[in-house]
Length: 129
Image (cartoon, rainbow, N blue to C red; front, side, top):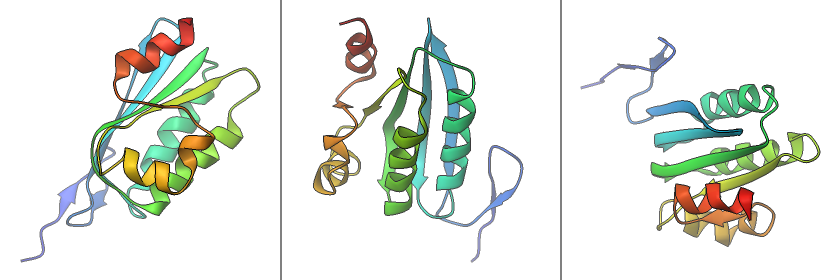
């Protein structure tokens, strides 16, 4: 049975590759949260949301991967691209805890260039420290 789902932007998403992305603000910090699967099919949705958020000139950006079940290399590439594209002075922090997110980010070295946090509160607190 080939199930077809609809993504948040109304376009069909492939079965098994669903990713919801949301944006919210906590004072001057923008939080882009993803849930589901971030792979080569859904990573562009996350990238678009991150780049749109950066375009709004936040004081900082938090990418919250708490509800991500699978993070493929395409998703990790989006995080590196966001770090490289961020204007001077805008820090990017990632919320990732567990084997599906923090482990691969640490293994490939992304944790060495973008700070990882176990919780959203921890990430947000790092901006005021």
